[in-house]
Image 1 (cartoon, rainbow, N blue to C red):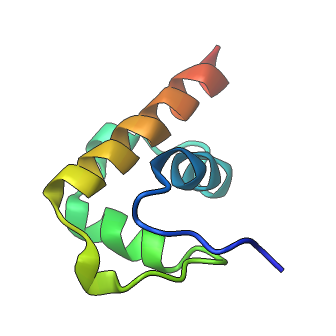
Image 2 (cartoon, rainbow, N blue to C red; image 1 turned 90 degrees about the horizontal axis):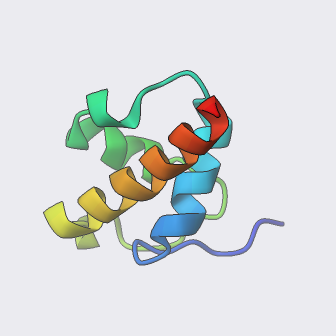
Length: 72
């Protein structure tokens, strides 16, 4: 069973999003789609209404770091 993920777990979420969407540039993802992607992750256990722009930005940047690392 996956560990519970909260909005504040930006790095873990970034890793999981990179694994799930390896060819997607995170900087091209709209926040509405990012919100959906996060809430659909296995183990996501936070209140979907608790997201906000700074949290989504942190997740997007964590995902972008993973994306850049994967590109080499």
